[in-house]
Image (cartoon, rainbow, N blue to C red):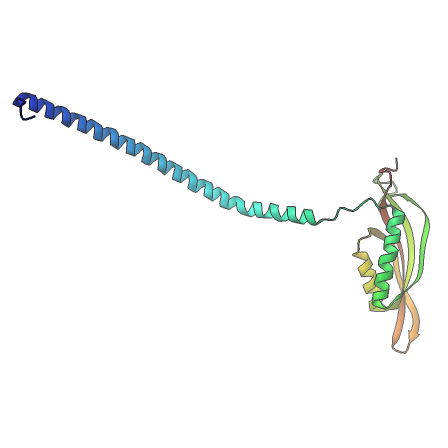
Length: 194
């Protein structure tokens, strides 16, 4: 550069200066584009994190529903007769635990197509019902607790009637006799009553 005449040196210096300004401008634009893109990505990321935070309680709720659904027992098909046998076992266990006695347990006839209590027409074709009548004797609170325990048990049934009457008199109190007429609900072995 020492050998260049002054005019060429000034021209070369102005070209370097021009290319430096262009380079700085291009570099600035490039940084601006990258910075703007990064800001946009940060903004979008923050928005997605907000949406994720809003959806997290729903996800936890769905997970808890799935867990509770997985805990539901998958019961095999149980006919009305099998359900009546199950009810008899539950009733015997509840009554003996409470210190009461079952004085009567009668099954009335063949199971029929299920009809809810408000209708004379069968409401479903895959369920049957069997009529059962039983009596429990014991102290009042024990009899009520035994009936309540059976009512919250595994066997589905509906009360047709439930009555209480005075039983024998003891030295420590009076027994009560509970008479219940119920309909035990079971499935049809083949799937429908047609």
